[in-house]
Length: 314
Ligand code: PPS
Image 1 (cartoon, protein in one colour):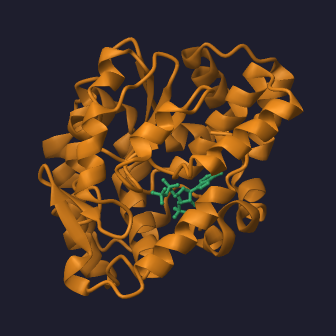
Image 2 (cartoon, rainbow, N blue to C red):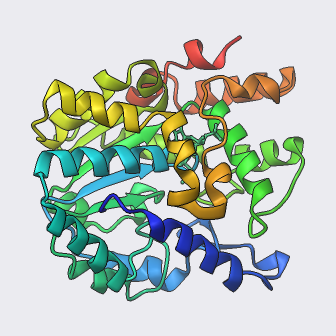
Image 3 (cartoon, rainbow, N blue to C red):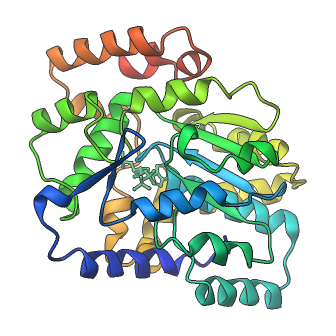
């Protein structure tokens, strides 16, 4: 929530220690039909989330893994800080409170008591999540928290996820061909990309929900930031928008990544491009993904927004 994201590094270090002896067969658990990595979440926390009380001024960032969550986390924190104009003292206090409450980088990570601790956070909360809508606290919708749904084209998402999995011991190491099959079958953490996007599609016309694409931000970050700021009711000058954009570029974030994400910097900030799928997809895999997109998402609101033909066809 505050700009200091040191706790991502601390959280990951702890996950690596806690998960050091995890058995391969325990890599995932299933909750409401979706797989989750055991090293990061547990069923009790997911259950506890059902009674979590969202606030009207909460900002929820919802994105399937590897769609740019860390990027948008930085953007949202920066826009919020610039709009709220916290004093230096308040900034320090926010960081201290986050540490004291031992907040974790995603709503669904950590222990079941997390929800209660989040209730004690006295500032506006930016809540990041990879959960499908059906697993989110219903209060988010009931209390009309603002939800920014982040989407990225499925081919780059799969490639990014593949590299990520192979870099973290608590996720299975696999060949690209094996990973592709698992991704297509939803046998990866947070389940099926296609189900995820199709489910969010049902909400996307709601007044409190806005979708934003990784690719549109890559094409024109300033414009994307203005759209996000408008949706969240943040009033920012051109200069402020420009400054947030500069600090949110891939280069700027990667350079700071050892500070923000510790030894996982290079894992979270890998390449940051559009079209990297061309380096791994075979012709057969292209056809399979194209068919699946056509069946599940083509013609839906989010499916159109993804601009599949522009970003996923040769
Ligand atoms: S995670 O682990 O699910 O939270 O990963 P997530 O942050 O959602 O996605 C990681 C991908 O986002 C890229 N990234 C960026 N792209 C452009 N600009 C900026 N500033 C930026 N920051 C992160 C990151 O490099 C991952 O994509 P790939 O394709 O693997 O590089």
